[in-house]
Length: 214
Image (tube, rainbow, N blue to C red; front, side, top):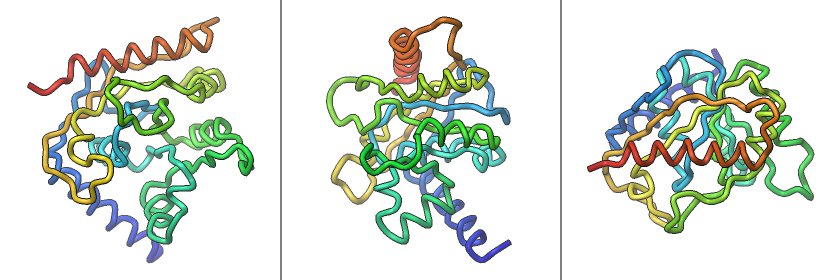
């Protein structure tokens, strides 16, 4: 094992311990089991720490096989981010600028699945800082489902993390968070983009109703 790999493993353990300490995060598996299986986890997006929290609650044998889909411009902005994004999380880095993009984002995700990885993605495409529960979904998840229709797509609702790390804040506020995993879904035969995205959105919102903290 190289020095870089050792440092990445240490950093991963520190990140997991810190996330659990600050959020006391609990995972709820509702209609799906935490087993090693190639999946696409799709979640609501209100904080920069969203995929970290999902990654944290996965069993360790699943965590190392699950890659977040993230913005290249953010994770390539400094040496520290490059190390964390590439070496710790092994993120699938997507160029969000169509004018400079050299790789097809859907192709990148499909290739990662073909290599045996699971994915974490956010179909809203950007952080939701408004009052509505979800922003409109981008089409990428639909196109991925058409290319890999045999892969389970699992909705995941993250509760409370936007209050732990509000936009513009540097230090987190300790609060209990929940990550609720829902029943897997797949693209149906003949299902169009709008119907698929609407069904995905409904499945995700249903987890919000079940997972609200009292």
